[in-house]
Structure formats: C-alpha cells, structure tokens
Length: 260
Image (cartoon, rainbow, N blue to C red; front, top):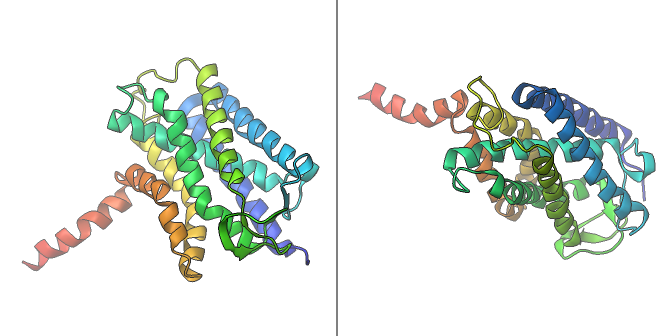
C-alpha cells in the first residue's frame, strides 16, 4: 500500500486553506465578526470531534492527506467548515426566496442544509476514495465497485448518517446560539439570507462539486451525478440570478431575435 503523492496532498491542503479564507470573508461580509466566529467554531469543532472519534475510537477510516494531527487532516477539518457554511448560506437564501417554513426559514434550514451537504458527499466521497485520499476499514455497500488504497470496497452507509447528523448539529447549534437568525434580511447588499449572499456561497461550493462531477463523467460513473442531483439543483437555484447564468439563459433567445 503506497503513500499518497505528496503533491496531491499539498494541493488538497492548499485548496482547503484558500476556500476557508474565501468563506470567512463571505461570512464577515454577510453576518459580521461575532456570528462568523460562532460558525467557524461550530463548523470546525463538531465535525472534527466526529472525525476524531471515527478515526481513533471506532477505527472506521484512515485519512492519507497530510498534515493530520490526531489523525484528522487539516484539509478535512477545513473542508467540513467550507461545505457546511457554504451550504448553510446557500440554503438560507433559497428558503427565504421560496418562503419555505411560513416565512421562518430556520424551521427548515437545518434539515435542508444537512440533506444538501450529504447529497454533495454522495458524489465527493467516492471521488476521494478513488483518488486515495482516505480508506475505510471495512467494505461498504455504497459505491461498492470503487476500491480504496487498502483494498476495501465502497463507502459504509454510516458515513452518510454521520454527514446528516454532524451537519444538522452544526446548523442547529448555530441557530440556538444566534436568536436573531430569523430577523429580516438587512437592506445592505450581501447581507445574510440575501440573494447576493446565496449566489456567492454557491460559487464557493463549485470548487468542491465540479472536480468530483468531472471525475464522474470521465470515469463513466454518472449515477453519482444523479445521486447528487439535489445539491446540483440547489446550486442552480442559488445561481439563477448571477449575471453569467442570466447571460447563458438569455443567450439563445437573443441570438434568435438577432437572426430574425
């Protein structure tokens, strides 16, 4: 069993640091310093505790990306925050726009965030397993045709239960500790829950979704794109108002009118 290519390990870690910086900037702009620090603490602390227990006590998996103090790679710790915060901010906007929860999106925000983030992991986890970023101690029923670096097949279903539980725990804890989360969207541009904040959060999630989607297409594993369709639908919903998306959608009609 060979070691992970150090260049890939460094690239994954550098990517995680870059995306964390961008997410923190987004959060500071959207919700201010105190709420940013709150989500950073919860978004790192709760999932890292879950990872630590799964690695060192349950012995369910082993990560191969370095550095990994206590067995939990820095890139994984940062990735939990990046995906969790980005999905939360994206769904915050979508639920406000659709009026879900009777105008109180916090009622649906936690389960919606957990489901969307777990849908993304239905694509990302097989991708990472195939790259050799981690390995599971036993065979899993999901993605059973993919073999990890230790020869074990697939991903245990418990992994996705963990995604649901940990992501929901982060968002619920944030909601309980921030009683003003249901306040009206501030008038300033880019405030939490605004379309601008949702679109920018969706853009920050693309660097996680697109490489995994490209892998699924290249390896002819399109079923994982289907499994992650709820996340992709949320991305599209959040991005609909972006100038690039609007230009893409209006382009054909404009060309048609120009040709008349």
